[in-house]
Image (tube, rainbow, N blue to C red; front, top):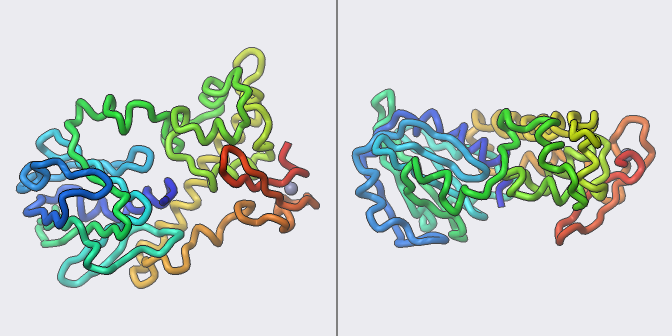
Length: 297
Ligand SMILES: [Zn+2]
């Protein structure tokens, strides 16, 4: 499953081509992916303009000038390619290699871009856990995909104050609270481990300890909010830098897995300056947690 920074790099890679373009035609090569396409999928997009491309959690959202939003989810193995007469690019950077076999090209958007050039955006998905839907903009926030989603970890909503408010009184382990999608949307296992390590916070301490008795955020809550943002933004910047290097954008090396400070480093020395601890692994709600018991309290 792509993590949030990966989806964000895809969005940033697609935006220059998609935004402002006219969808001349849509090829839809199957009736369904993980879910069926809307029955009138092609007709509702043909001849329409894409006014904006954004992201909410791990959903890509293309606003259409009819008031529809084209909702796209990459599932486990989905990717997009951009093709025109001179370029083939796969925006985004993935830990796991992405498929290119044309037999898994399920949707092709034929575009007339904002600068009046022809281009194609092609959705490829070998395992077909991804999906696309069309939802009217006013219905989006109340739609089952979105209605229970918590705050965006990359948006302005995330702060020490927000964490204190969301977590006050909670006895659940801090790591579980951070992974609760109803509180914070799209923050995955890897980046929670990394952000907790940076902040020196134990994954097993009670989430409520980030709020003082008064309800105000503790210093660590402020630090954690900053660490979450920094961890995600560094990953996006690293992924984004590969967008310009199209020959390596197939994900074969996977930048993200080389950049972890604590994730997947069980038994290795902690990288916190001055710490002599060793990274250890424990399982919380079925997921591996990597942490340093010496400097994460
Ligand atoms: Zn340590």
